[in-house]
Length: 230
Image 1 (tube, one colour):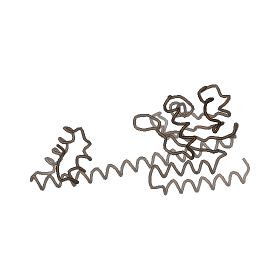
Image 2 (cartoon, helix red, strand yellow; image 1 turned 180 degrees about the horizontal axis):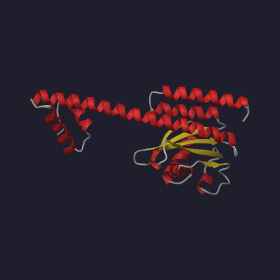
Image 3 (cartoon, helix red, strand yellow; image 1 turned 90 degrees about the vertical axis):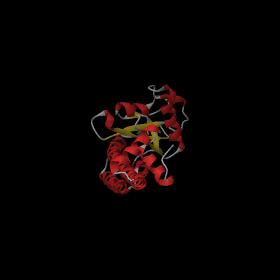
Image 4 (tube, helix red, strand yellow; image 1 turned 180 degrees about the vertical axis):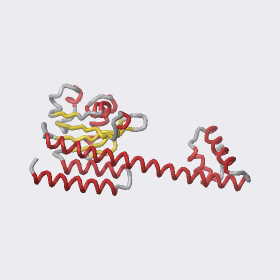
């Protein structure tokens, strides 16, 4: 990689860091990642798949419907480079999908994706810290050079931290909102039935258990209707 290339890459990642920091949520963070992937690398398409709480792959962002179809097939069959990168936390590079024999089913795919580089998004040493996979896809064989691989790893590191941070902040915001709702609902019960806070919370909890409804949803219904669930 020449000095001008290094300077351009450094500038690109500096802008990426700023944009990821300013992204208001998980969706915006992931969109920034796939857009930067197309700018910084020799790829025709890009995509991100994330692990859900149930350890299932979920399509988070793609730059083209071609990638969506490619992901959906792998998720449905639980086989392919995406699934391997997720489970083994190892990058998968295919120079030509038409000749690679690891996943024969890829040979039946439309020729829109001929080369690929799937890089894990991970924030720790334990497998449970795997966040997802950044996928880079070329319309021609041999689209990715050694320099592209190096840049992809750096991009994946930036993306891993940003996505994990955005998810944490989103979870924290949801927890704060839930506490506010429950507090409002408790206030309604305390005023209506002349009970203390502990008793009001016990009432909400009992209705939550009896109706198999999340506590925050019980609270929201009480606030909206001024009535507890039947």
